[in-house]
Every structure is written in structure tokens, then in C-alpha cells.
Length: 234
Length: 310
Image: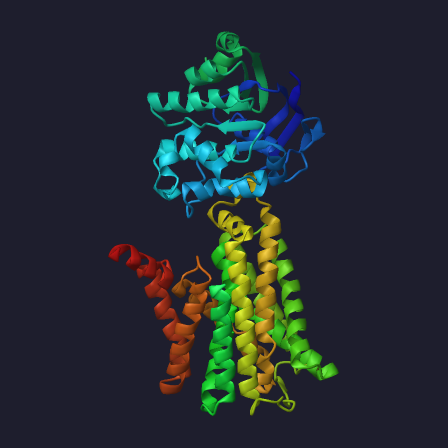
């Protein structure tokens, strides 16, 4: 499998605060990749830099062997990078269906049937006409993923799609992500729910204070002393 | 298709009225109401669809008026040329304001548009050629056949501009552009990551909105036979252009039309029967009532009512 995304020495500062200090990682086609780290360690900043909501100050980001770090976010979405937001940001004046029509119309240029297929897969088919402001928390998370899927991504970044969900709901979302991966979509998962990210990921990277402190298989990560210190403060 | 037949019928009705012996005052008042139809429709493209509140309608409108005056004074340009030029100048200002949205959102954008209004007024106050602070008296050219008075002709011109403005707003609403603008209003970040080129769409909306506002201002100096900066760049234009769509409903192109017809007519009636000062009060009171009791405007009320009785 070839390399899909290369992050090379990426830094990001907010004023005097260093959110990312030279992060490098490589993600291969079809991989299930986990990104963990304590609060404020730079996980969301990193994926904002990848997805284009933020511009990195230094370093390069290459997607399918093309430099993307100066492209606006919408162009990156068109290249195949889609994301969900940590705090769901539905288009609240639109129905669930219309929410998905936005990326369908602006990115995939597909037909409406495609949107129904996505809703069915994600388990929102019966809510297609509901106003997105009336959805429950788990439905909003699913909508975030569904909307990202409507852009037909190659790389899906899931930013804490399971935070605040019950055990059964976590399993439900996890199954959706496994299914999407089986279709060939590469997935970066940011998650605080350890058992979920450990079950899902083939490879995990742990960030702390803007630096990668550890990289490896889920089993090796939980054994790592630095990770334990970062999380437990021991 | 139904829309175009309706629009054509309304325009023909306006034309027929202007050629009939109806009292001249009707056109004098109707012209102002139609101006508000254009302004509130134009405002709604940016403020209603995309959610960027513009208090500077007067800046675009006034710049359109002054562009017309300059062309008239320098070249005796005909009215049609004045309108097209005013639209171009309004579009240019709109383009600049659109670039501004790159940095300014929400309340900060609204404040910046107020600043633009004052900048424009100050510029014109200090420009001798267009009369400075005292203004300029203008001599109307001869009226064109088949109209019997200049006011009647301007009424028909404004009716045509209203049809153009509403058609543009309707196109923007139902096309892919409208869905993108709504996405921007709901969440600009989510829109961008759903593939919507947010900056481009915002600049587009600002430019179109500005062009229509500029065009609406062009015939005003001829209507008054006079121009001066204080009333041309009045904040009242912006307040009305904002209140009318809010009262009519911002989600649909018909909203600003209904709001402008209703509020504009009430204002004209109040001006004649009570006083000019009270009509500003009427705008304020109605706006507060609607924002509190019917935040989705007349269109929203109507939809609720239909759902209730079905």
C-alpha cells in the first residue's frame, strides 16, 4: 500500500504558545490510524492543519504526493480530505438530507440517490427530512460523519466522534467507521475513549504538548512509559 | 414559469397605471416603496441568505446616487447609463466589502459597514464638484414619451429595477449558490470543509447586493431634482433595508418584497397623515414586535399557519 498523507515537521504557534512543534507522520492508503493525547496536546490543531481550517507556520503537508499546506480548506475537501467536527456543526436551518446535499453539490457532483445510500449506511435514513436542529447527540455525530462521506473522501478524519456517547452508541459509531474503512477509506481517528481507539486503530500516535511522544501498535502504546506519564501525570 | 408570468403581469400593471390618469401622488409615493423593494431584496442576498448583516445600505445607495449625478453633470448621460454606471460602482464597493469578510464576522462586520457609510458621506461632503455639504440643484431633462410626467417615468423605471432585483435574488436562492450561502450562515467552517468556496461566495453575494443597491440609488437625484449628502447617506436606508426583510422573512425571496410593500406603504401613509418623524418610530416598533413574536417574519407565520390547519 502506498503513502497517502505525509506530514513533515509541521509547526503551529498561537502568539507565544506553541501548539505543534515539528510533528511528522505518514499515513498509508487504507490505514486505520489513531491519534491520542491529553487535552491541549495539539490533536485538533494538527487535524485542522491537515484539513485546512488552520495554516501551519512551518513544515509541509503532502496528500497523494502533492503539497497542500497552502490550499484553502474547500480545495482540500475536493482533493479527498473530509472531516467531522468535535462539536457537531450541522447546517441547522437545513434538513438532514439537505445537509448532505451541500458536499454532494459542491464536491462530488453526484445524484441524490447517493445521499440516501449514505444515510442508510449510517442509520439516519428515517431522519432524512428531519430538521438537523432537532437531532439527538448521537444522531448529530452520525450526521457529521454522513456529511463528510457525501464528499466522497479518500481520507476521513473523525474528531472525537464518540465523545459523550453511551457504550452501545460508541459500538454503533465504531461499526460505521469499520465499514467505511472496509470500503477503502483511510481513517484518522481522534478519540479519548481508549477502548474504542485501541480496538479500531492499526497504528496509534500519542501527542503531548505539540510533540509526538510515542508511535506504535495499540498494545505497545498502552505499555509506553511516556504515554502513561502524559495521561496519568505519574 | 409561473414566476415570470407573475413578474411580467405586475410590471405591465405598473406601466399601465403610469399611463393612466391616476393621481400623481400615487407615483410619488409608489416610487419610494419600490426603491425599498429593491434595497431590501438586495440586502437580503447578503444579510438573509448568508447571514452577514449590512448596516451600510445607505453607502451603496448614496454612492449610486452620486455616480449618477457626476455622470449627469459631466456628460449629461441618459438615465439608463446612469443606472448601469451606479450598479458598477456599487458592485465595486460590494467587492471590497466582500474581501473584508475574510477578517470580519458577525457584529464586527456590521460595525465596519456603518463605518463605510460615514466614510462615503464625509467624502461627498468634501467634494465641491457635487455640491459639498449644501448639495446640488438638478434640472430634470425633458420627459420621454409616452409618459406625461417625469415622476411617472421614474416609477416605471424603479418597477423594472424591482423585477430585476427580485429575479436575481430568486435565482440566487434556488440555485446551488443559495445552498452554499445558507451553509455559510449556519456554520462557515463546516461549509468550507464541505467543499463550499466560502470567500468566493461571500464576495459574490456582496457584489451582487452592492450592484442592486447602487442601481436603486441612481434615479433618486432626478426624483428629488436635488442631492445633498446628509439624507442621501442616511442611516435610515440601512435600518429600513434590514427591517423589511426581517419583517417579511429572510429565508425566501418573497420575504423582503412583502416587508418592503407593507412597511414602505405604512411609512408613506404615516408621513402624509401624521408626520415624517413618526414613520421612523413605526419601523422600530414593527421590527421589535416581529423579532420577538415572529422571528421568521410574515413568511414564517404563513408557513406555521399552513401547517396548523392542514
